[in-house]
Image (cartoon, rainbow, N blue to C red; front, side, top):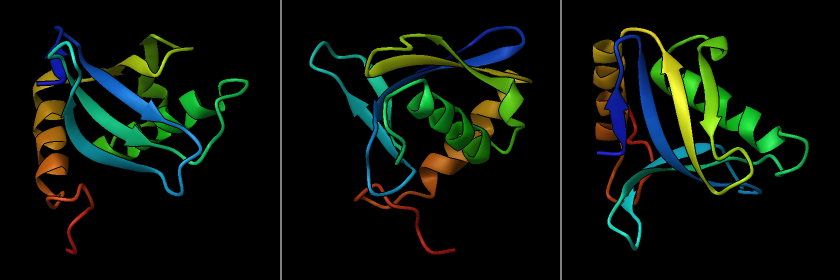
Length: 112
């Protein structure tokens, strides 16, 4: 699992790809060291925090929370980031699992 829970938040390990053709959460991947990460792509460039801000907006939209509740807690200048989402962690996990379940095998959202 690319996430862990705290008493009042959800922590996500994310591998971000900036300068993509779309903004999307594309599922779970495993790094060479065995860690699981959430794969995300954003159109923004990695300058002046634009890609990080786009990632926070993407996570907020995906989990149906206010963007102000999502922040980069570590890895701001790295490809692998830790994202903190404030709120009820159990409800956030349910929303995240629903989001991931909506992906097809190629990592695209299924038609609803």
